[in-house]
Image (cartoon, rainbow over all chains, first blue to last red; front, side):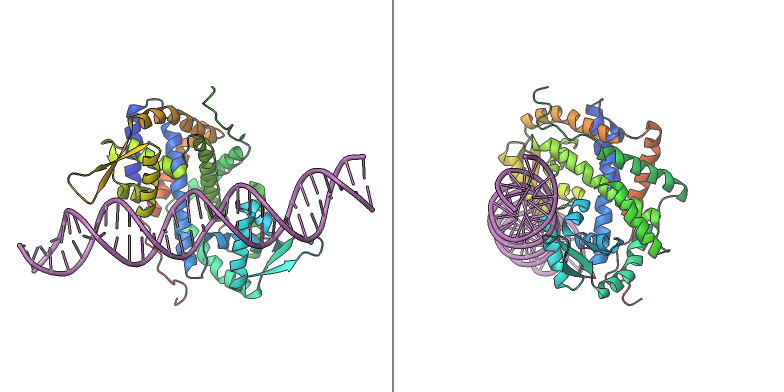
Length: 174
Length: 174
DNA sequence: GCGATATAGTTCGCAAAGAAACAATTACCG
DNA sequence: CGGTAATTGTTTCTTTGCGAACTATATCGC
């Protein structure tokens, strides 16, 4: 994608629009590119295991749960994905032996997703490789700048979370 | 999505895996969440104009070009999207009057995309609202931490760009 | 207890995006 | 030149994901 090209384009627009908030544009643009790059690399790694980023996220949601069982709807909520999609992903993961569906005794509408024991083993082999990938990607950074980066991102995230939703049609009836 | 829940999950995995590089996991996870949040908010804003994030990116690629005309394939390359998708997006944008397709005199395989004059006007009204959105999202940050953040992201991006591709099946034949 | 309302999972249909195949053209090289 | 290889845009097919409708349960007001 070539970072310099993009900075060049932003600079070109800057020349025409003195009011352009360059830093905000650059930072948001870079965050989106970074996210895409992370996804792409993770996806490459997971392909060999018959997984993709979405199904991996689901597995991690279950694996990281202290009770070991999670409901599809709560996974969907955490990952901002629809319940319909969770159904489909669960179907796939059950078919490929990663996940089991258990009825929930307390709530007969609900289903509990649990990792199969082989899945837990495979994930324990896979996890270090995923972590190595993350570390490799962050490796270009001086260790001293990691803490400030983490702090800034955390601040951003909690700020955005409590931002009001956009009023539909703003800018029309000013 | 609730940030604390996620930190909690990562902490839970940390307890079971002493080797977990917590910071790398947290930072990559937060970048992906941030990207999703930015996209979601931008999407909300653009819906009112009959656009989505992808078509907006295409429009910006043309708008930010100094010559004012860009080929679909070069847009796709810059945005990491397929030529097939570019054809579809161009179809839509032409149908809704944003973009014109011109034959390229020098290369008869190629097509040049150009903004209609009305599109340029509409974009000049829309751009400040998009920028305001970006600034609002970054507004939670102290101004002093913006420069380091920008620098870190830029470093990360250029580091990741020159990372070697993942060898298929790594970890199998170690 | 019972009716209105809300929630969980599923199914169906649709939008967004990539991969592969294809035709037309261009570039490369011998 | 002449033929092979690469590139451009398009079409077709598949994957991935969301929204709305549906059923079965659960919850809350009375």
